[in-house]
Length: 146
Image 1 (cartoon, rainbow, N blue to C red):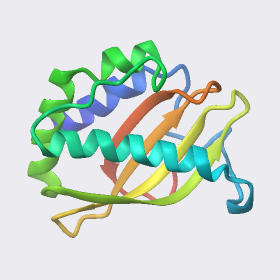
Image 2 (cartoon, rainbow, N blue to C red; image 1 turned 30 degrees about the vertical axis):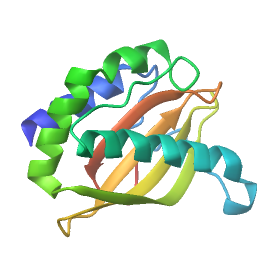
Image 3 (cartoon, rainbow, N blue to C red; image 1 turned 180 degrees about the vertical axis):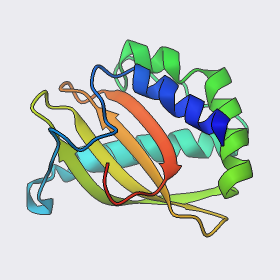
């Protein structure tokens, strides 16, 4: 569990904001969500997790992610985090959209409920920057608030 927390800290360091508190983030009403962007972020998160499940890794591109995220979510990090996540939650199955939050800097937090072999409630969180690029990616036990 400590190793997973260390990985989460690594991903947090790639952001210029703190996503651990809800301060500054406002929930976006479902009627205002860009469904094309949502599906794109959901597909990217799913592709990352499925690649890890297959024992490979997902190579992020500069069109999809920030430079810090590309460096932070390296092959080594993805493979080691997958081993730890599989020990905690079992094999990945799927994600379903839960909510979207945004702050004044236009960082968006896409929250998904992750389905794994275990019965654990898991959150898969993808954070995008103002340009829509992946700037953070987290897998952690579910909590109703950020």
